[in-house]
Image (cartoon, rainbow, N blue to C red; front, side):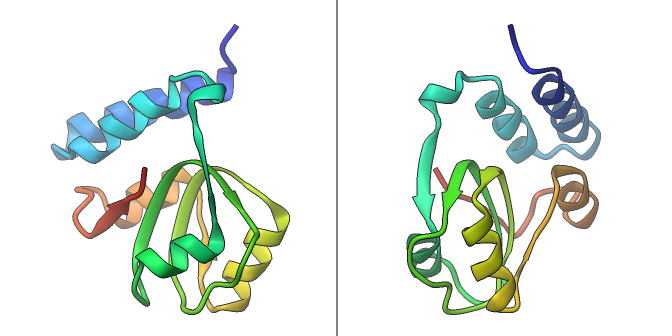
Length: 115
């Protein structure tokens, strides 16, 4: 049985994709509906290597707290460890919800989808 919160999130992402003609939100909804065993993990260190300061990043999996974040980013992921949140906040970044990332970037332009 699917998690009702995940189903609600997927519906909201699909609705935002249609309303703003933003395929990134539809792709994220597609990832959300996959089984959790098919999702990937990524470390904070790897995100720091891939991104630049000020990037808005979406990761459809779990973010783990190994390594350090060298700069500030705005991050949304399906799951995140407490250590990862602390490291992102310490670097001046922030962790957001799917609703706030859609409000801040309705068309998805400038959002980096990792995975």
